[in-house]
Image (cartoon, rainbow, N blue to C red; front, side, top):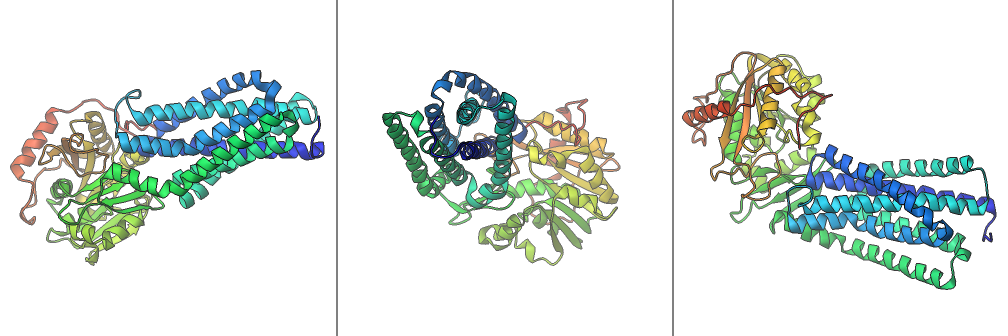
Length: 527
């Protein structure tokens, strides 16, 4: 066949196209996994859904492309244009459906989940159709044995996938974000596919097909460019649709997205981390008192707080007389910085970071505990993300509680937030079973919100109608812990000994027995 370049150069250009298309395809996959994990939760489930559906669809796409081999050049050009448009806009579409529908439900009644399935299948079909067409194109340049052609093609494909897989977390995501990163990937995809077909294989297309493909490519590129220009306005509008109109801070740290709303003109302050409500001004005090105060009944000169970078748990600890030192271990320094500098959040935590007794370490709680001194703390407070979040599973594992147990001084107490009590009893009692498997005895208790719905706590909520009715906690120690309140605790308090005892009895009656503990190699929490 006629080529504008020598056959060797033509083969190199086709393999370069394979490389670029493979890199773009993997970015689309990773972008869907990342965005779905953020919007829907449970990254293991979302990754499994996206990748399994994509691999399945790739097989179907490869079979379907067999019928297009006679028109391989024009078919490949059309597929790349469609893939660039679908893949490039997929992140914006998912975020838009999540922001403006707010649907949470089963797989087939949930807007974001249904769209995730649709995009996974569509992108998989298009990626799968690329390989047979590229094989046909590379063989048209110069015939060679099938094994050699497959080896060359898949070598370029796998190397491209490696580059795309590394570019997404280390380049696109931190520098551009998910929306702009997906749009840029689509633009690279359409330029590479269009240049390959219109430049190298233009003689395989009729004059009308060439102009039509050029017009389609320019249209897709224009749509992606327009979306990139408008992406900031879109993201701001979507953020307001999700969080309300009083968003004051919206930032992406190296760990998570941080959004702060309210806190001015009498509006309650809400802090969201990766879309999950971490601090709710309406009931945050009751939540943190329930987490901290039962554990402070007893010696409490030395206290360790794992998590709690917002400073609210530390505020409750430092209100008790007799506290000499508090060590706080927080993963994200941006949260600590916000808690120090934001006027509303600093006012809510009582400017706790000005207290010289508080010492902050930026580290992963699990890794920090491995090197923590033994028997060093009278009280350990675990103010950590919800156990149902996949990234937090190791922080609710038997091994983690074993490390926490090692840091407790004789008679020391461990306080654990264990998630919504009534709505997710299996998760709560799995945490209890895991703590007991680490050699500690537990006293489970729950605390209800004032309006029968907590606005605070490390879990996603979507308004009062869906807020948890109560939160579950565990007080643990080497000997049977006594669930009571420190008589020297400051007043007034949202908790009373009588109400706490009644809630503990109610929790004990609802026990789910014989649950196995969660471990690092066998996590048992569902998102």
